[in-house]
Length: 370
Ligand SMILES: [Ca+2]
Ligand SMILES: [Ca+2]
Ligand SMILES: [Ca+2]
Ligand SMILES: [Ca+2]
Image 1 (cartoon, rainbow, N blue to C red):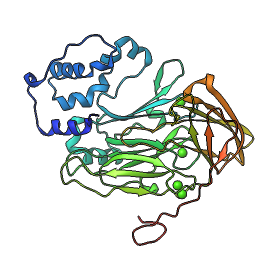
Image 2: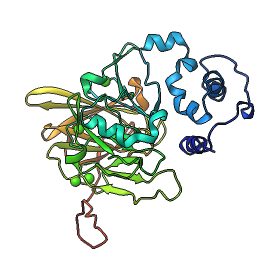
Image 3: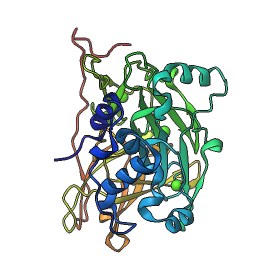
Image 4: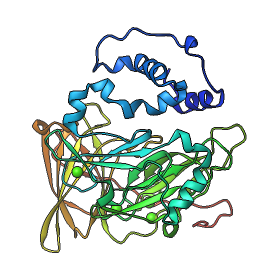
């Protein structure tokens, strides 16, 4: 059965210090083997006098222990020291996937609201911030947190990405909070302006105060822009909240939605690469997407719901089925603002006749409700 790390983390946090003698020591075989995570946890507990929950929260900050110091140093991936969710997205549309890691500083969890408030007032807090690692394409990464505007103290749990405005650049949304009832801070939204992130929590209407766990991007009403569904509520019994669905209503940009079906690869076509060739203001511009469920906590639509900026009426599309460049297939002159079904090894793209859904609120009105 899949482990619920968040629940275990909370239980461990609440139950206080756990005696070292209660922890079963597992023999560690060799570095680099991810199956040794349990053994590494135990080592962290033992070596640093941590509780088990803190060790779990810190595991991936100590990933050098897992992959080996030489690989960690070569890759340039260091910190944050206390991390929780992470997302892999190609934030700058250069074709190489980058890594955004959010912090979840256990020692300051009891004062989340005051720390976040202090940061928003421009005060120094000393709490560790999010890190963005840009993929340099040579098995190395460069930290670009400050220059891209993500050096914020987000305390994220749910953490996912999509495209708020169909400009082809991935934006992200973080569900925030911690265990205590009073750790209520807005869930936070960041708009990607061609590689620089600007916080749009207030103006987007996404700054819901309840604790954010699962976050899913998907075009629920079939109108070409991604809507967001979020699971809200904390880990403590009674810390409940109604989930929220946010309909997207702001895009004038072009888009195309692709439903991929594999034949030589798994049918859902996960990990397939999609490169969309566009012309924007007489300049060639490629957008890179992949088929996948997105970030940490919550799963996005497996359709490629691609924002295209001002791409105009048609685009050419290149698929690397299963992510394999040897399984490349090209579809030419597909109409933007349409839904297509693309099947591996079938030359013709089929238009999906998808009608827009008018989602209604409980009172029967067609739109809803801030
Ligand atoms: Ca990149
Ligand atoms: Ca965007
Ligand atoms: Ca939509
Ligand atoms: Ca819409």
